[in-house]
Length: 79
Image (cartoon, rainbow, N blue to C red):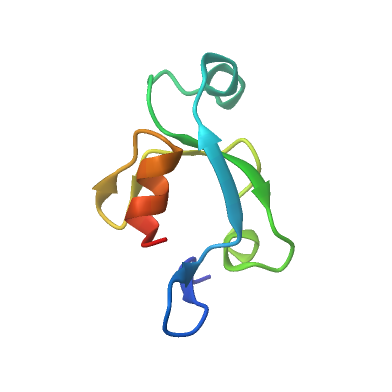
């Protein structure tokens, strides 16, 4: 499934809410790194949901850009 979908001419729409990765979320995801964004919510029937993204997934790269936190996720997504 295509994860990135445009909501018109303005900005891409993934259908997720992310937050900064913390030690607890990293542990639950089995992720040993110290930076990234963790998916907090996936909107039903969104491009992310159709691609199999789940709450708790850790994002470390988006559009070939490193993602160290939720703010960098937003920048990489073009929000």
